[in-house]
Image 1 (spheres, helix red, strand yellow):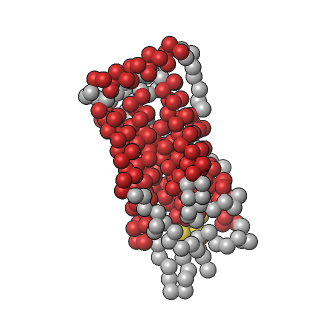
Image 2: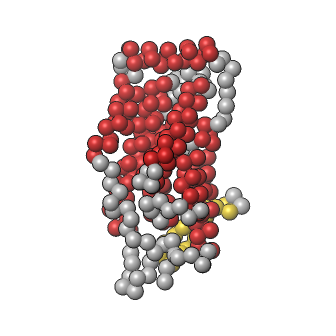
Amino acid sequence: MKKFLIILFTIVSFEANAQITDSAKASPFKAPDTVAHLHSKPLSIIVPAALITYGALSFGITPIRHVDYYFRDQIAKNAPNFHTNAESFFLFTPVVLVYGLNLAGVEGKNRFVDRTALLGLSAAFMGISTFPLKHITHRLRPDGSDYLSFPSGHTAAAFALAEYMAQEYSDKSPWYSVVGYSFATATGVFRMYNRAHWFSDVVAGAGFGILSTKAAYWVYPYIRKELTHTDKAGKSTFIMPTYQDGVPGLSFAKSF
């Protein structure tokens, strides 16, 4: 989790510094409330809720648990020596693409301040919903290394970021969603092939990840309304994250 947050912090800080120091561009902080219309449709929670439910049922429904054993046995039979660290990089691809596209001039739904806050809120929801469960459920990993198997944290993070990319860019092209979710799916598959998680761990992790980002987009407009203050002269003040030479910090930014 610490490594995940540091990498996110570094990615976000890079663009923050780039935008703050680029005086030739319009201020990225003086932006309208672009998130007001971003509420996902209520029915969109059906899929992540179903994924989470499936994972939870694996603790009490024998046929569902047998699916876990089936995938474990097939992986052991067909790829006994498989090992990769690719999932640790794949899960970050969607957020790298979101900030990279913005730096390249391909705007998503939100400007820097809003999309960064949404990213942080999504990560917070994901962490709160998944990591305590690892200790509560106390499930042994397929490789027997520890009892923190359910749900898959890597998969949850990957799908949270894939949904983040979909929220920001799906209106431009559905292919952005396809790309993000492809990397997220690959992350979950690799976690299974590395014997780090059961199939139901990965399925539930995907559900928690998607739901975390959707929740962030639902509640953020209200948080933003309460916390963002613009004076009568139209001046706004924000604090941006920085990460330089291994030291995290904050940058003060004020629009005029």
